[in-house]
Amino acid sequence: MIELRPFDSLGGANHGWLDTKFHFSFADYFEQSRLHWGALRVWNDDHIAAKSGFPPHPHKDMEIITYVREGAISHRDSLGNEGRTEAGDVQVMSAGSGIQHAEFNLEDEDCRLFQIWILPDKDKLGREPSWGAKPFPKDDRSGRWVTLASGRDGDNDALPINADARVLGATIKAGETLDYDLGGRKGYLVPATGKLEIGGQLVNTRDGAALADIDTLSVTALEDSEVVLVETA
Image 1: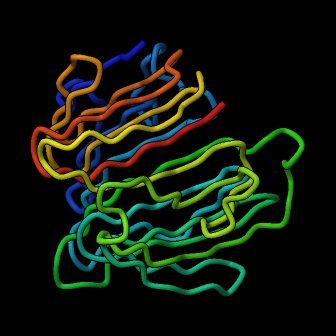
Image 2: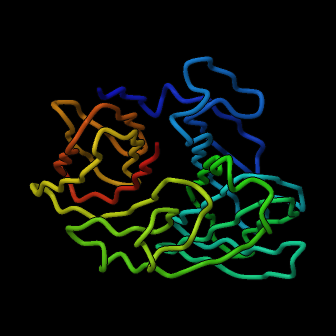
Image 3: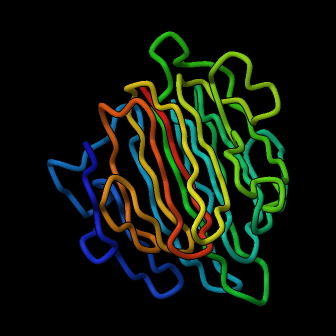
């Protein structure tokens, strides 16, 4: 099953400094059919103006993955962690028993990112909060999937999360096809750039594709594309 969610059908809000689109119910946007996809709870497409950002605010028991597409975002939290995550890189915050954080675009250019929230496994609720970031150069993803964040055994090179899920990235050249073994698990895929064909359906830049009951996912790039995929139970 492939449920296409065109970009124009997404919820959203424009606060001036933040122009955002919601793939799932979030804030004042509610859509019963888009509450979650497996353990995937939030996928926000954020455009953050230069010299602005999210002031300190709390979270609890959520795995929050930030995939920076353009510009950079600077993080600070109540654990004393500070870091700057640039385009092509990923940061992960496990909110666990509770954490406060702020995310600011301190740059002279706008920042565009995907903010992805995944529910932790029930037996991993209330763990110590943590934060980490890692560079994942796009060249390393050319023609292959790279696991960016994971709670699955064996994904030792990925940033750890407390969920039975993976966040993957890939760049695919026009005309190439890239397969992924979903094994019947749920998937949610968004092309950050480019245009794809999946199961006969066209997936344009920043559209969402909710995937279920698929053993092998085949993604064909109609244009050079940068793709983000979440696999979850």
